[in-house]
Length: 314
Image (cartoon, rainbow, N blue to C red; front, side, top):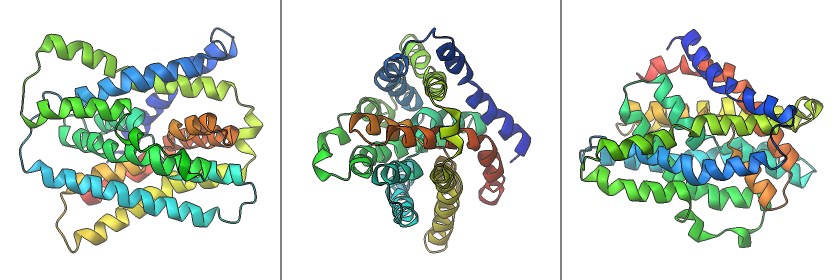
C-alpha cells in the first residue's frame, strides 16, 4: 500500500480538527461546545453512519462465518491489548492516571474514525466496511463493560443494559433485518440517512479540536505515560493483532479481508469514549484527553507505516 497516499488521507482526516480548535480559541465555541457536539455525534450521526454502512449492501450466507471471526477476534484481541496495558502500567502509582492510560491503550476510535478511514483507504471494498460495522457490535459491548471498569475499577458501575441500549448498537439492530433479507431501501430514504451518517467524521474531529484548544500544550507533551499509551494503541495493538491472526490462520483458514479489517481497526487511535467515561465517573479526565489527542496526532505517521504491511495480507 502506497505510503504517501495513505499519509495524505490520514492527514486530511486529522486536519478536520483545525476548525474546532480555532473556533474554541477565539471563543466562538462556548465551554459546553464539546459536550453538545458529542451528543449530536453519539445519538444522531454515528447511528446513521452504522445504518448507511449496512443498508443496500448485498448479503449472502457465506458472510456469516467471516462475521463470526470478526466478533471473536474483536473480543480476544481487545482483551489481549487490555491485559498487556495492565502489565505495562502496573507499577504506576497514580491510580486515576493509570486507569485512563489503560483505557486509552485498547479502546480504539472504531466507530467515529474506523469506518470513514476504511472507506478512504479501500474505496469500493464494501466487505471491509461491513466487517468494521460488525466489529463495532462487539466493541460497543466491551466499551460499556470492560471500558467502564477500566476507568472506574468498580464492577457496580457496569450497566449490562448498555451493551444493547446504546445508539450505535440499536441502529445496527434496526438495519440488520434489511441487510440479511437484502431489502432495497428507497433512495429517498437512503439519502438523508447517508447525509446524517457522513457528519460523523467531521464532528468527531471538530470535538477533538475543541478539546485540544482547552488543553495546556505542556500537559500533552511532558507526560511519559501519554507516549506509552499511544505506543500501545498505535503500534503494539495492530502488530500483536496481526501476529495472533497469522498464527491462527496457520491452523484454520481465515479470509484475508477479515485480517486486513481487524489489522486496520487495531491501528486506529484512542477512542473519545475513554475521555467520556472519565468525565462521567470522575476519572482522570486530563490524562484521558492527553492520551486521546496524542494518539490521534501520531496516527498521521503510524497508520501509513503500518499499512505498508497490508501487502502481506492482500
